[in-house]
Image 1 (cartoon, helix red, strand yellow):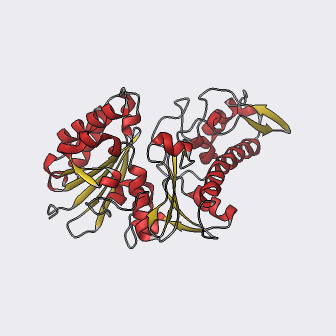
Image 2: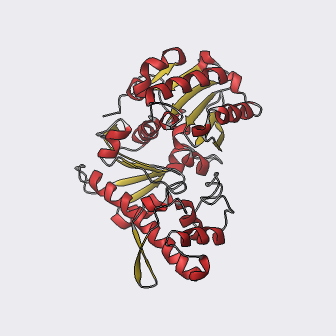
Image 3: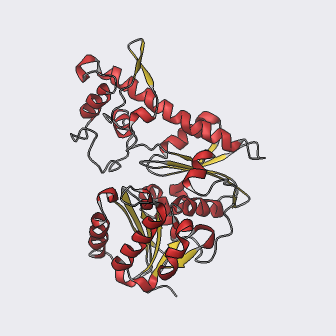
Length: 351
């Protein structure tokens, strides 16, 4: 039996905490995201959960947790990161209804979580993909977040991933360390066209992908919760100024059209990353056509990749929160919401 007030899903990332709540009638009542810079310490995690507890019935719910925060350099290694996060969460959430998502092993109680650290570490992608595979028979779910992008193929409602750990998934092209907010632009390409010349980029953290999509008018509202690269304003002129620095220039050295074109070039190169990874995964499928399912705050890129490659597209918004007012933010926080849909028992969909 679930507690009377329902179930909460928590996706504990290194930069953001995402949570979702379904009440005792299985109705999605709340979804939100908060900035939690855990590389600075665990205080922001505790503060965020305590603030949420003032507004929602945290003490009366079952809690399901997935995480990627064990990767932050606050911890010496991933296993110790999982153990410390489990310990911290046991002090913040009711331990008797606290479960941790351990991938193929399903949900494990808090008291047993440390023994399953390898399965719990960075398994949030699997929660999203497992839900998608239960709702759609075949396709590739692509979750483009603020920092990373996950690509997971599935056939006949079963995942066909070849990697499980982050290292394996990076090797197989099932994870790309680039998102639409926090990624430094020097990680997207090494040179850019500017006024008829190829210009090499400065290897400095002068600008991020948030600046690119802000200039293009595509950055979702409230997607960028952190200070900009220079600590200054989140505005289009500010983003143009930061973009100019990437080529050793000032904003006055180009027109607004110049900076818009430069931003569009960066966006195209990021879409190349996704398109190539998608084509690699599609080549493993016996189906002649592929459905792409877009999740995350950057899923507008997935729809664009689907159009480029001639694939059909499904927005995770329609799968996770149909007939509610939380569709957009539910798709932005897909792992947290997906946890609420998964069976508590051992998962049988992971390859």
